[in-house]
Image (cartoon, rainbow, N blue to C red; front, side, top):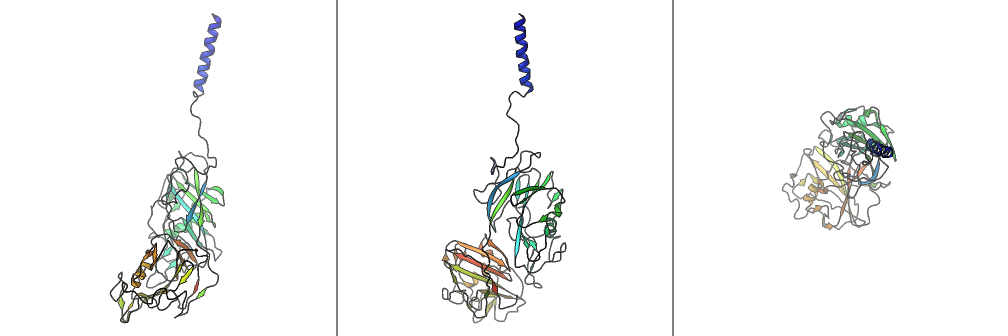
Length: 412
């Protein structure tokens, strides 16, 4: 009898002990282990197919994140969802000095940092053309601040010729958006965390966000609200380097192989009537006068642009060529947006991302603004023709190994 009572007491004790230990439930959460991907990760909008993505944490109390696998990015790619309009706000840089930084001609050399802004685990794209001021009649060349964006990839271009250092606060001041510990470009929420990946070394930045120095090739991630368990990293496919020997452009000269296209506009091009809103006049008043350059390279062969495109016996279009150098002259009574598509329409030749004046194939476009170069990923008809802009269109193989630079025969 006493033995049976002792056995029951032992059984009851074991049951109580199991209950106190949680009854064998499904285990506690673990911190990140450095894995390059995670189940259920959401892919940032417009990111390349198959690229791994950072993963939002399940709660604001998540542990320190790890670095995600690098996502390959080509300049010109849009990363994230649209949230802000392109350019600067009304309080941003519109040409006057901002935080001691002047707006002027683009530099001849740049380095870059990268900025990612996440709200509750969703990547928001950094706008195009922050720090870029469009041309005006008074300033036909426009201007650029020494820190700016040229696309929505998150890449911040920084003038590297002066040896100056720049801060995240200066960039936001040029953008015209708020940056502090509780507000990032109008986004508020708790917590706000900032991480910096510098060559694979991930650190959390806890100081004043505006004082964060933009070091070359650093990747800055700002998280508002729900944090990430993994911080994004990127590998960049940059444009080809510059050819160190400039091509001298001589009025009436030739760059490339002539004869591929006849001179002048075709029968489907400009014959005197307005084309895309651009007029043809016998003695046009020229108050806005700038030049751009176009190079067309087919299977490694540089083809000379025809002369006299847009120049007729009775009138001259606002956009035209005088020679075979590839210089496109814009001479007009007023400033407006001029595009590569406009020029091809005056020429009377097709232009798509698979057809350049009758040459078909995949077209790769590069833009160089006085040393600020990148690949263009959009509709090439929409490329603006602005002062000092060099455009290279590559069709076929081999790919261009260097981007040409030029000594212009006319002042810009």
